[in-house]
Amino acid sequence: LDEIDAALDDSNIDRFNQHLQKMSDRSQFIMVTHSKQSMQAATTLYGITMQERGVSKIVSVEMH
Image (cartoon, rainbow, N blue to C red; front, side, top):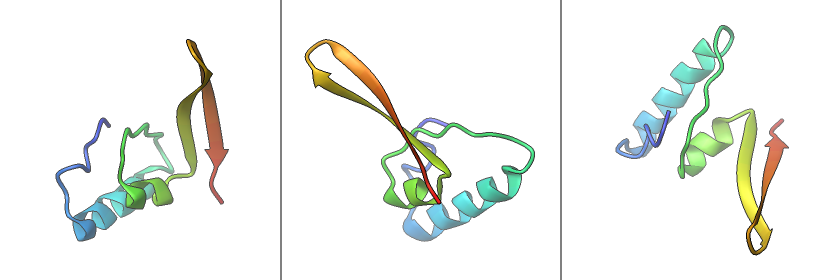
């Protein structure tokens, strides 16, 4: 889901994230977002960093 929450206001982002959480017992979702609310609702965050020029590294954080 690429930036699917970008056009939503805060209350609708919360509703959308609650809906995804309900469906997550039978499916996995990958969501590209810049929304802090959506990132807080996630179980795992992935990011890309470039510590040295031309060398990308994947970083993951499990949320509890």
